[in-house]
Length: 443
Image (cartoon, rainbow, N blue to C red):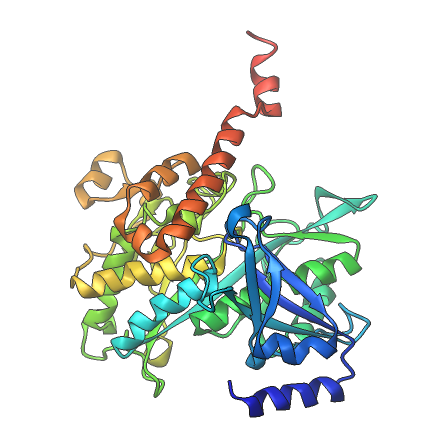
């Protein structure tokens, strides 16, 4: 952005009576971070950036190379709604630089932008539209429980769905922050909800996912509730996913996955993209399902996909093609969840799809039968393989993947593997209540 745009933002901040400015970015795990500065430093933040110590930010830097600069993006200026911040506060997203003036390779946003540039060189803008599922749990003395806030079920009305007002407030808040919710409803499990917004280019969408999570958590606290995007917080009921709808658009708004003369009205490009997602599904699983808990959701019986296959309607497949065509033609990947970093998640999905395009890969035939009902011999006949059954196994696939190393870059790849391998080893060593209840009485 030029000086005129910076001047406009400064004038807007003055008109809005801004008292605090939040400069926001994420660590490599997707946790929002921010630096708060007074409005007198807003111009500096946009022109030069604000220096900060990144040594304690997950995946950012070591103590020996900890100095970073957060440079605010003028276009991202929004006023945080007063339901969240009573004092007039602005939020700007940041690009992260090192002190040499170069973009920091550990910035997840920068990494996604680089993969997006590869798609743009081919004439495509990668669009994503995630379905954001979450739970609302009661708290006791400010501590989260796993007691749902209601006993409602799928699409129930407000007489049973007592969080309808909360979702409405979330919708109003994010609209004030620059994007519109187009659907919000109760999900299948008690206390489970879903909020969706319109698709956009993947960088914009990733920012909106981060914003939506923040707004949901902040407003839930106002109700004395705890909002969580944990994939499987309660045994025996449905888990929360983040199905991601994907398409290639041109700058003119043409959907390149649509071909009225193609099989199923899909273009060869769409089939190549599907094949790329299938080919790399195991090695990108650790990014799309980035916790040990993620794999408690990826089990048969709860509509979460466990098998590497695609279909036009079949919801037991990992990839589904929704019925809408024309500009709405899209590929829905169903195994991601909301525990991860959307910048990384979108980047690896795009890289996998682009590899399918570059190599002109073709997917196997669509599986329109319930895969959970197929026998082992039938799965073998159709060439259907399974996603990793544990986070540890997914890390092994990622460690061996050239594509994941190439797309994430050395810094993010190595830091992610280090942090998550530690997390997995800690999980493996932990003794659970289930083990005590199961084995202590009998061994």
